[in-house]
Length: 294
Image 1 (tube, helix red, strand yellow):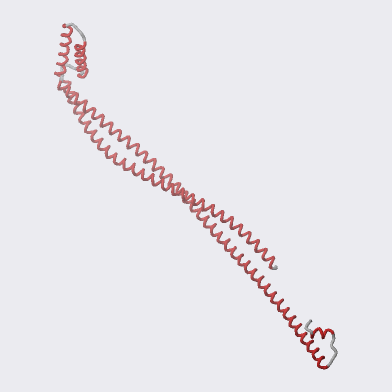
Image 2 (spheres, one colour; image 1 turned 60 degrees about the horizontal axis):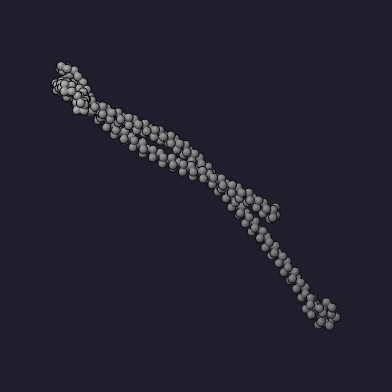
C-alpha cells in the first residue's frame, strides 16, 4: 500500500473515530445531566424528610405534654365528681327535711313578677293587699328553705364546675387525638419518602455506573485517536524521509554527471593542448573547447 492509500485509510479511520467520540460525548453528557437532576431530586426529598421529622417530633412533644395536662385534668375531674356526690347527698338531705316542696328558682321568679305587676299596674287596694299577702307567703317558703336552697345552689355550682372540667378534659383529649393523627400521617409520609429515596439511590448508582462506563469508553476512543494521529505523523515523517532521500539521490546523480562531464572536458582539453604542442591540426570542436564555449 503506497503512502497516499495509507494516508487515505488512516484519515477514514480518524473520521469514524471522531464521529464516534462526538456521539459518545453527547451520550455521556445526557447521562450526567440525568444524574444531576436525580441527585437534585434526592436532595429535595431528603430536605422534605428532615422537615417532616422536625414537625413530627414537635407534635410528639406536644402530645406528650398534653397527656400530662390531661392526667391532671382527669384527677381534678375525679375530685369534682366526689364533691358532686357529697353536694347531692347534702341537697337530698335538705330537701327531705323541707315541709313544702318547691322549685326555688321558680318561686323567686314568681315573687319578682308579682312585685313588678304591683309597681306597673293600677289596681284596687284589696287586689294589691291580696298580692302582697301572696308575696309574703312565697318569701316565707324561700326563708324556710334557706338551708336547702344553699345546698341546691352549692350542688349547681359544683355541677357547673364538673361540666367545665369534663369539657376541658374532652377538648384536650380531642386535641391529643388530632395531633397524634397528624403526627402519624407525617410519620407515614416519612416512610413513603424514605422508600422513594432508596429507589432513587438505586437508580443513581445505576446511572453513575453507566456514566463511568461511558467515560472509560471515551477515554478508549481518545486513545485510539492518539494512536491514529501518531500513525499519521509516522506516515508523514516516513514520506518526508523518502522524499528527502529521493532528492539526495537525485542530487548525487546530478553531481556525478557533472563531475563526469568535467572530467571528460578536462581530458578533451588535454588532448587539444597536446595537439597544439605537436603542431597538429585542430578541429572545429577543438577550437570551441579552447574558447570555453562548450
